Image 1 (cartoon, rainbow, N blue to C red):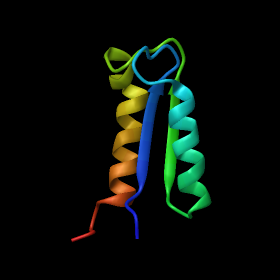
Image 2 (tube, one colour; image 1 turned 135 degrees about the vertical axis):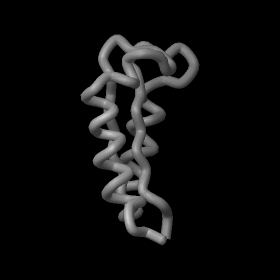
Image 3 (cartoon, helix red, strand yellow; image 1 turned 30 degrees about the vertical axis):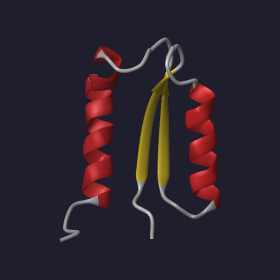
Image 4 (cartoon, rainbow, N blue to C red; image 1 turned 120 degrees about the vertical axis):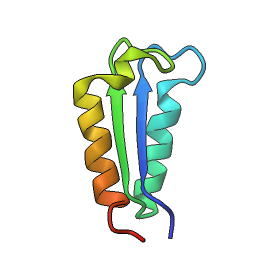
Length: 71
């Protein structure tokens, strides 16, 4: 009964290694939890790279699929 996950992780994140996001994503999928992982090349821990038009569209798709009409 877990909520769906959307992970967005930069490859040069100095706080959290990208491998941790990959491991979490894999474990969630093994447990049949919906999980989307986006790895952003040369992005760090947040910032402008996470708010590009492409990523904003992906956020909208994810929220529409997982939250729209869920009330």
